[in-house]
Image 1 (cartoon, rainbow, N blue to C red):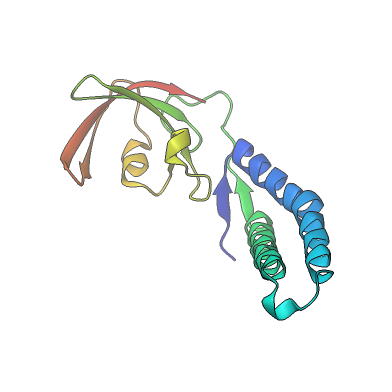
Image 2 (image 1 turned 30 degrees about the vertical axis):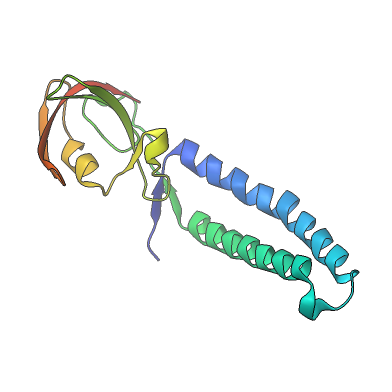
Length: 155
């Protein structure tokens, strides 16, 4: 059984999502199905079919989350906080154009580029692991080689 790495925050997020699905979404969809059934012939009842589809989605997501959470491994930041980049670190980078970006290195399931969270298995994160403030990192991007300077590391 393969363990799935999580940050403490990421694990809590998914636990809350699972709890919401079980205590709010599941009961709501049961009521919606019962209401749609009361409207009569189920063969031509669009409300019923939509509610059943939604129920299938909810149950599949619950099963997926239960599986992932049962294999969760929280990777804690050691004390004292390390100077180099490790899993869970917030890393501020400066590129060749002096543009500054900040990313957090997280597990594959937590990755969300809109929230500036990159997967530990991504090329950028793999290149950053172990680096120190001031180090230069080069990665092959779709547009060619990119170079970044590590400006700050925070946990």
